[in-house]
Image 1 (cartoon, rainbow, N blue to C red):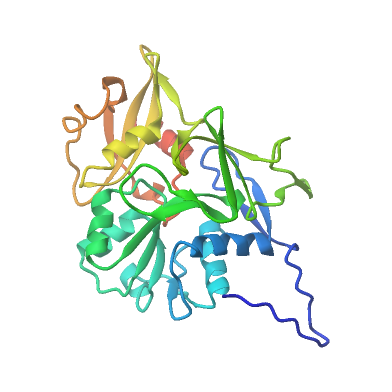
Image 2: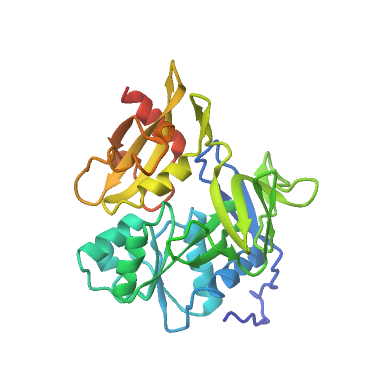
Length: 335
């Protein structure tokens, strides 16, 4: 693990763990991006928590598969530093070539699917998955090839991961990692942690991101059962169809269980009679399939998509979370 040793000399700098060291824009998937500011110790606290769950030793190698302007890419770098391990940086190569010699990687389910389907020769031991619903069939196939899959829940404001677990097909995102606290207030997830940002940078100064009680209110709907957090969806994403509330993430989890589905997003479209109706935007394993019959006994009638569209290449975001606002705008243009 990381050890800090102070040195003397003309160019020596005092180690200041509470010094501000990064400014990272939130994804802006539900609104305008904000600039979250973290200290060195916040990033290291984030790394320590994740590595309490995922084995990552000094002989292991984590591929820097995500950009450093994104908190998930930064998380890889801080875990590498904290563990005293190796990190591989390769760019503009096919994923299989980028992974040569790597034992760990941060991927989206689509990328792992393709590696498994192609029977790619990789040395992966563990994968941290994010960005989309994770089908249980995916993690089972990975396990058969000796790859452990981990998943979780994180935010830019908390220097990446807050809760995590080894993927098991259940709906929860795991328990809070060391140094993190979670509670549910009026169905909303509230957080505080050693990895929390000092604030948002706005007009040349830091603006606190916590409420009067010292907690960060996430706008995520959640539930806690037996110490494990389940994210129901964004409070901002909830919409109504004929008086019935539709939480897109709940519908997405059901559809993602189909083996041909790589990614799915439910988007509301305006409707004169119902107010809104759900539309599914899909990415498939190989070719599109008719899921309208498959969902009939799995979703309530009002939850069933009225249209099924294929996710266009221009909205895929290189392993980073896809913007729901961009999806809504694209779907509206298809009307």
